[in-house]
Image (cartoon, rainbow, N blue to C red; front, side):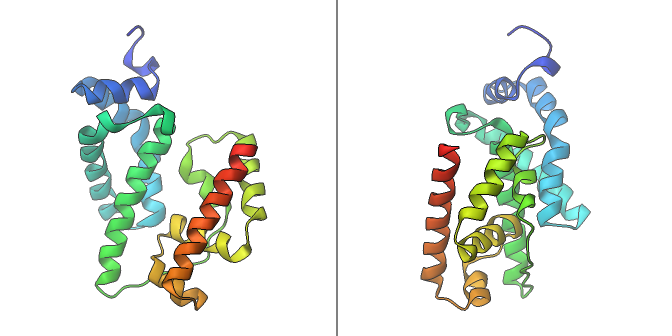
Length: 183
């Protein structure tokens, strides 16, 4: 590949990481760790725990890099999903120990988690699609995917069976995906 590591696109760094290139992995870390740390901090506000989770995220990235598929999403989105899922795992572990947390979420938070510099057209399309959802489905999606609320917590908050919450999440995400694909 031509150019310095700093000039390579993230997908090239991930591919090189998958091949065991430690320098590419270091550059990937340098260019993405601040963003991923921010994603983790939004879910897990304890800085020390967030740092531990960030380290775990990059261990997972090292081992899972060969599974990255550009056709399924952008590199930052893939990395943010790993960070988000790991942070949510830690939150859920804490919740199972007796701490529960559900808060209202601003829909604009969704766009900020996905991309370091979101395209304003994409953000506008996301807002419009979110506004077009059934309000309960939208709130359920935002609480689940931004705040990390479990299906059980959502069932309690919305006073609905867990099966209904699963349906709301599924239908809401399908509607959101369909709307975004039309945009």
